[in-house]
Image 1 (cartoon, rainbow, N blue to C red):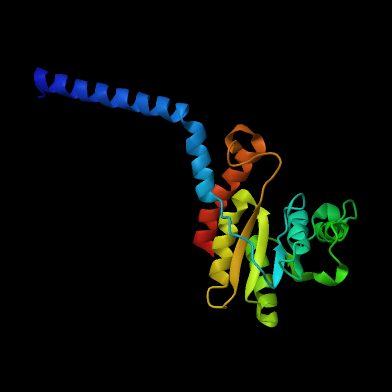
Image 2: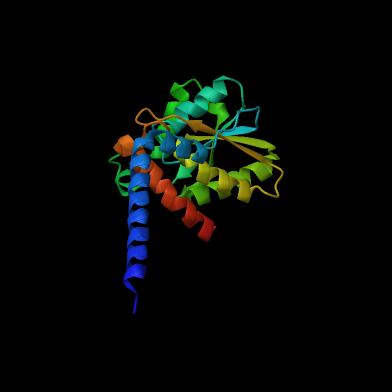
Length: 213
């Protein structure tokens, strides 16, 4: 049976732990902005762009990725832009929407990229892993030594891990050039819905990719 003295000791310990927990919560809330910003900056991969054999536009980011790739092309970083043959969605199969692959090409042309510099790779790809296989095939055929991939800030971590793994023994360097969305940034992503969704999705998908690929 615990003595009255032991009960008092445990009560004081529980009280101290509770006070420490409350203090941590208060400090975490008070310093949430620098903490969450720092965490985001650690997550984002930001490789300095350099001369490359091609710039890769991954599917699923029609709003930012093609324009960012076109900018790198105009700046002279690569002579070629690779787009992926993204699988058609049901609405695209029925002709209700323009296929993403066609929209990507149109944006690139509107951004000043000539038709001769645009090359589509893969066939009906459905995820980043299948895109990495398609790009790997192209790189092997063309003896590519460096590729630039431009994608949204929180997507960079998973893409870098996956492509580095795929190209580990290929002698092809992969550099990630992040795109800054208008809706959120590393400094405020937790305050807006698009930022929360983007970070949450990547936080879930990266461990899934670790386990599966």
